[in-house]
Length: 253
Length: 219
Image 1 (cartoon, rainbow over the protein chains, first blue to last red):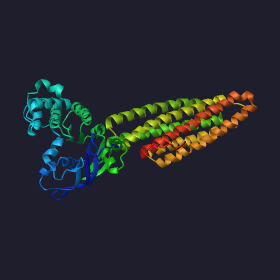
Image 2 (cartoon, rainbow over the protein chains, first blue to last red):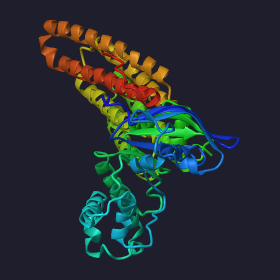
Image 3 (cartoon, rainbow over the protein chains, first blue to last red):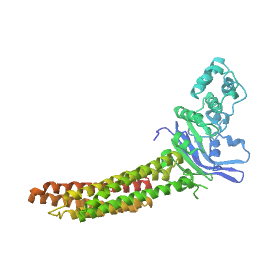
Image 4 (cartoon, chains in turn green, orange):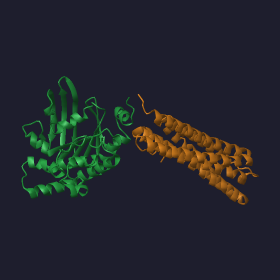
């Protein structure tokens, strides 16, 4: 057991899109410097849950939330700066989405928005972020070339570097490798293992084997409920709930 | 509910082969017992040939399991069932070898005086057969209770083994000329005692497969 307090402590979380309840009484906690995989069929609430953690759902009309989510002991729905929250809790999406600008500018974009002006400081940040995202060696000779010229796998690592550049604390990833080939996927998975030393990572994935490979704990969502949340090896070798068993072994049809 | 048709089909085929392997081992044990009773040396030779079938089945089954793990990426209960196959086949193969050992001794203990103690071997082989059948059935039926019942039969084999050893040692004292022949009884009794242990291993693996936890069924 990690003696440190949890990074996120979710208590009785309910979420509605209008009349439709998308999350039902979800309670669990996420330890710092761990990778948590969220799995479940489409529409089960796992991506909705992920978006709760950086309050991205605020942008959707008609969303209503009850319960609490403590981030480092503070309620994320309390009186706090949402921009600051999103800086601390970064998100990587399913499809790589580099800005139509150079590699360097892509990475420097976030820090600039947050007020970093010094060219040297920006350059250091760009390099450090690219190194951390295991991309630097591949792009160091073309930092000022368009990011859209990179391969899909490189673009996704660029997006990870872009998130790292604003020096977050948590990385949220929504199916970050579903658009990538196995080699790029393996690179990102290796990277995740490195990154968890510095960050807390929550990843939504439809790839069961990926959840098995990369995560410390896995949560299985179904119809908005967190059915089971346990160490990943228990989920994949000896799940407690019949519904988890059926889902991970491909028996839902 | 199920849409892993391919995996299910393959596992059914696998179960068929495991049943075949178990039946062959049980059959060999019964034949060995019969050979021992009748001092039938020809039957004993047949068992050796049949054991080759058992060995070939083990390899076939284990290859099939490895391919299923590689291609179907089974998890949870499916994975536990497949991992358990290795324990089942490995221990069945060893049990098959012990049937051969029993058959081999027929030639060496045949003759006068007849060993009264051989009746212990017979009972051990009978219980052993029941354990082989029961252990394989408990695997195929995913039945942890049956596995526990079968493992408990091992006590009977152990009792017979102890009795045989004691009686044979006593016999040796009064028959110094038959010590070598009699000592073979003790040796083969040891093999049958181990057969019981192998089937207990299978039963423990079945409990693990069904319940997901390791248990020690006979201390």
